[in-house]
Image (cartoon, rainbow, N blue to C red):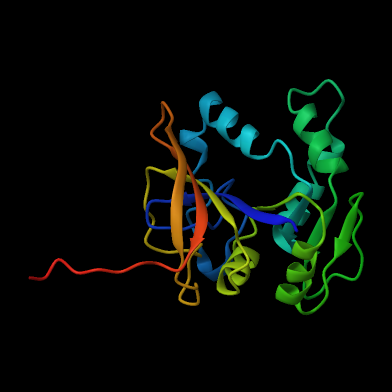
Length: 206
């Protein structure tokens, strides 16, 4: 069996849309793209690097895939991010897309029309840790089908009020265990939560 971990950036109000730049994702008229950039420091890079260190496979939505495929395969060997580029280039990548018929980035495979079913089948294989990077719509689908084992969330000190949120209305109620939490010098909190089943409930009433 494999496990699935989501590695993503979110605002304090849970928005995960367009973290890397103004033109990354303007769906729905979103005008706040690039909200992570002023808070991204070397310390956060170390946290994220550790999260990404040992993927057995990657799960990507089409938009994230296209951004990554336009960048990581083209870095020179002496680039400061060459180590991460090698990891991402060499790792098997499974891509959810309604329109793509072929993929050009090495080690890439299209998932079928039944994405939750295809991902459930991947979990049955011995792939190790399958990581979801970015890909907020894909992440929402996997959360709705209770397929995520670990959430790695970099929570940024900003709220936006609009945009695609990681946890939508279809999210399955889930109890989580805090594995670790680290605050960076720029106020970003890197949190790792592990799924532990259904939430428990109680009452403060007399």
